[in-house]
Image (cartoon, rainbow, N blue to C red; front, side):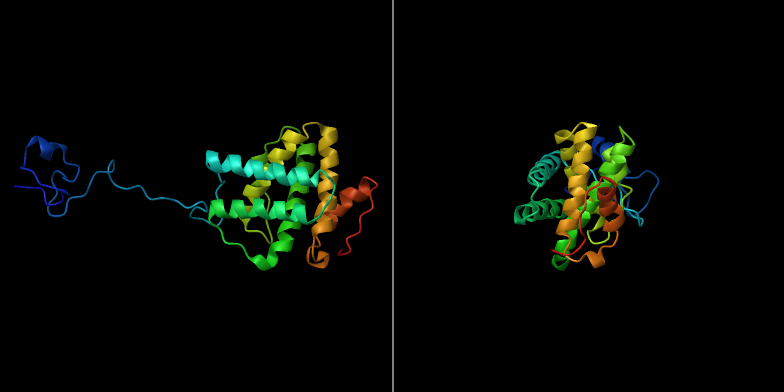
Length: 218
């Protein structure tokens, strides 16, 4: 008597091959089911099964590449110029995060991607300054995106923040960076009237620090 479920060849009942066959099930009749140890395990998407996205953990290779892109964008931002080079660097970082996660982007919203990512960076750095030692992941995972897909924003932002902490480890330098990012977020916003949260998250800290920065579109 042979096993009908064996993929290549059957075996006699009670033989060594029969005892080792993962497709046989003692006491069952007809179509036997492989034991749990050999059945395929259902996979779960990065977004999980519920409405709340699970925390994204990039592969080692992807993490290194994203960190490099975050450092490049931050390096341009630290020069104090909000020009096409910074926009391009932010584009590359956001696109890499979207590609890694397999999430499509709406090109028509590209301009707000820049200011939203920088706004969230300013908010995160302010939280890091208020709670020294706070984990970047814990801060970023609580943020909500409006234009950027949520998981893309989180992946790109973590890369940018890790680069910021590495480049500006002291409170004074991180405070300066916070104000610089806030000002840049306002400068890059294509339509400030559509992005009113910038008033509270970026303009208010600048005003408090005695720095005047108009929200008028450039």
